[in-house]
Length: 211
Ligand code: B12
Image (cartoon, rainbow, N blue to C red):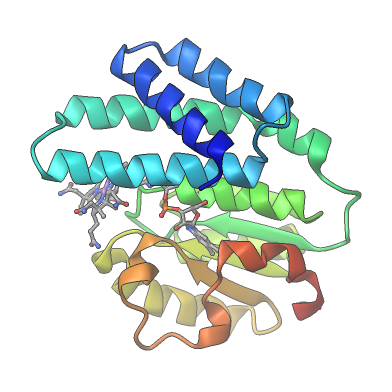
């Protein structure tokens, strides 16, 4: 982690511990505006913070409401970054992606961050968010003329559920590229083709792989 990311992380933890959401959001946005950190760097910092909050809750050191407080603060930071993403996005490259999580998968912060990573690579991005039925996703991809679909799973259970979901979508949309990712795939990815698993760091160079 860079020194700027370390500093921001400490500052965010301090403001969240003091239950000062506004100060946390301001510190994060200022770090991007001043160039201390890039948006992907900010998102990596927020992701690490969330993983540690989850571990701390599991260890009984953080209350459930505090984990929710942190999640809500991180969500506001990501949503408030939207204008900064738009300012930094290059000219459109003529590729469109639709992003969603499968039914009952409510972990959507990583998906939200992946949407911005695609925007920063010049993609036209349509975020459907969490808990999207397969038939609705298929309709959306057709109507939005998307070249690719990005799906996220955070739990073991939802990674297993993603398999038939992806198979149904791939059968209906054979020309559309499908990528999957998220915390569940860092633990296990058995049965998934390598070229379907996406590393966020590779998003800037993906455009040539579709259409
Ligand atoms: C916050 C949180 C919640 C929140 C979610 C809020 C929300 N709207 O997102 C709430 C409270 C709702 C929740 C609920 C549950 N949770 Co939860 N949750 C977490 C926690 C603490 C953080 C998740 C998070 O936001 N991380 C930050 C984001 C940014 O990280 P990320 O999703 O990994 O995304 C990064 C990358 O993976 C990547 N990425 C993500 N998707 C994709 C897709 C592609 C294609 C690409 C390229 C990249 C990419 O981008 C991000 C980096 O920029 C984790 C702890 C952990 N270790 O992850 C547990 C965790 C994920 N939850 C867990 C569980 C079990 C649950 C519940 C089942 C708990 C329960 N008994 O009710 C429910 C399930 C709810 C449901 N049906 O979905 C487990 C999963 C265990 C497992 N492996 O199966 C974890 C790991 C906690 C644990 N250690 O037990 N949870």
